[in-house]
Image (cartoon, rainbow, N blue to C red; front, side, top):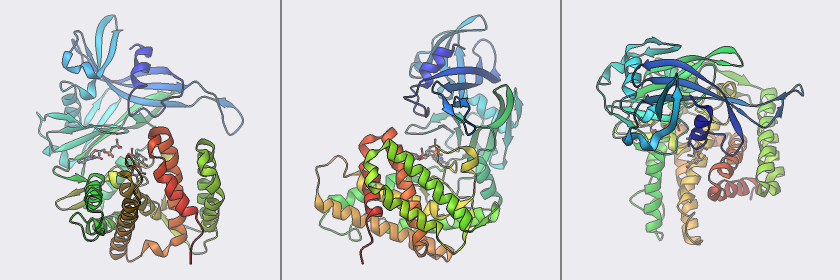
Amino acid sequence: MDAQLLHDWIDTQRWFGGKGRPWHVAGVEQLAELRGDPSPVRLVVVSLEYDEVDLDAAGGQRRQQEAYQVLASLRPEPAEHLGHVLIGESDVDGRHYWVYDGLHDKEATPLLLDLLKQGGTSGTVSATALAGVARVPDAASTTVLGGEQSNTSLVFGGVGILKAFRKLAPGVNPDIEVHEALARVGCAEIATPYAHLAGRWHVDGVEVEGDLGMMQEFLSGASGGWELAMVSVRDLFAEADLHADEVGGDFAAESCRLGEATAKVHAALAEALPTQSWGSAQLQAVADGMLGRLREAVRQVPALEPHADALARKYAALAERTDPVLAQRIHGDYHLGQVMRTAQGWRLLDFEGEPAKGLDERRRPDSTIRDVAGMLRSFDYAARFQLMDRPRDPQLEYRADEWAERNRSAFCDGYAAASGRDPRDDGDLICAYEADKAVYELIYEARNRPGWIRIPLGAIERLAAPATA
Ligand SMILES: Nc1ncnc2c1ncn2[C@@H]1O[C@H](COP(=O)(O)OP(=O)(O)O)[C@@H](O)[C@H]1O
Ligand SMILES: O=P(O)(O)O[C@H]1O[C@H](CO)[C@@H](O[C@H]2O[C@H](CO)[C@@H](O)[C@H](O)[C@H]2O)[C@H](O)[C@H]1O
């Protein structure tokens, strides 16, 4: 397939993380042909290389490489209904095709479903079917989820959802690993995993193996945590003379239940996967990592500079802690967009960890306080998001503070009730992890949504301010 065509298409996709940096296609490798003539469907890995040269630890020059998954649906005739997902026209194996993004092609996606349901292999792709996949109907209709996603998710027959990973990495994908481990210990606060896909491709001439996708139970009728929080804040702003606990859409009881569900998942993770006890050396390493991210963020967002010393002191306090910290597998990128409320309770989604981190780092044990801090930051985001496009209004800002505080506190209450340990008792940890998350968000917003930078910057100003008696 034509490399320039793939380049120009990938460069415009929401799931492509390298926008704005020059890069080129280094190779296109076919892993499997799911259907042959006359309209082949091929699962390919596009390897790309960034043009800028980095220095590696030994001072050598190297270029960063990445691999992306594409399901290419090759049609000998143009398909008008797929015009919005056309990759382009290309000559392949001596024939002319219109090439489409097969994950959006309802004639191509059933081939993936068949493979997932049957298990077994096709080319270098292997499918592992788990118990629940039998519930997905054979002739399932497919819907592609819209929205801001780092991957592409397909809903089959309203019963199963397949997340096809776009950016691939050799090794075990944490989302699959964690879902399987949690299902094994009977954790109820997740969507049951149904099947997964792995494949083999080459990096620098060496064959590697990695995960391509996971199918799990589709939580039908569930509502997203972020959307529910938005409704609650909207109701509060509509009656700004009332307190957060007086309006109909009060969210505190849900936040408390979310805290409980979070604590249960943390307990299940500690049961299912290895844990560590961190002493001062490990805490120093964590503080160093946070400091490194802070320095990088100051380089990218100069408005952070005046607060950098104060944040660095919070990280130093973490390293001075004398009590050991239990480290275990955690969610890693926890926020209101990663949880859904079903009729039975909250469910946690997407255990992939922070997309910007490498796979090894994402699989490393960490303090559960990283997740708690992530969700506390998310309550702050939810409270302030609807103030973004309005003229400044001190009354609404006051209400937003109140909403954030009420729900942050309810979440910690729920977490404490279910775990027997109140996260607020670990003030030094919470403070350092919350600051680190806000710094991550600052970089994320600068790259993706510059208009939102005020939210994490405001949090950093508050966290950096000297404590008042
Ligand atoms: N099991 C599920 N049931 C219903 N909806 C889901 C399920 N998993 C994910 N979703 C929906 O898809 C969105 C993106 O899923 P997520 O796993 O976070 O993907 P990504 O890693 O691409 O961000 C979620 O916010 C949710 O709306
Ligand atoms: O869900 P992803 O794994 O893609 O996470 C990334 O994008 C999130 C935004 O969609 C980002 O979350 C930040 O914005 C949220 C509101 O949109 C807010 O609830 C979160 O608290 C805030 O961190 C996330 O950080 C990023 O990794």
